[in-house]
Structure formats: structure tokens, C-alpha cells
Length: 50
Image (cartoon, rainbow, N blue to C red; front, side):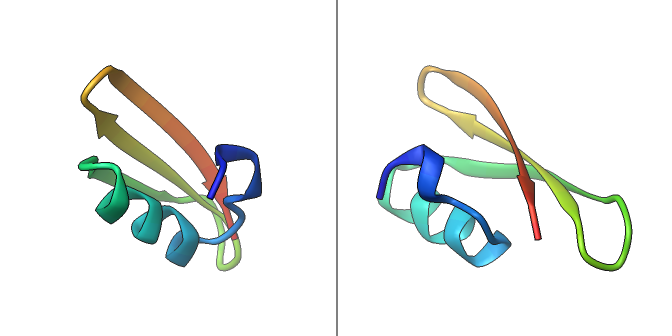
């Protein structure tokens, strides 16, 4: 699964399990949108998910 195909929080969590990455924080923006901060072996990524 490539990064540009991750749309939901479930997608990001599945990607993290496959890539030895950890969710550091989930920031709720509203009832539909969450920002997800992920620590990878190479640094950090931030996802905007629904």
C-alpha cells in the first residue's frame, strides 16, 4: 500500500503494522477528520485522515 492511498485511520494503522512504525498521536480536528503523527525508522510522517 503506497502512502498516497492511505485515506482512513484504519489504513494508516495497517500501514504502521507492516512498516514497523508507531502512531505517536492522533489529533481530532472534528468528528470526521483526524491528524495522525507516525514515527517511522526514518523520521516522522503526518497523515490527515477521515
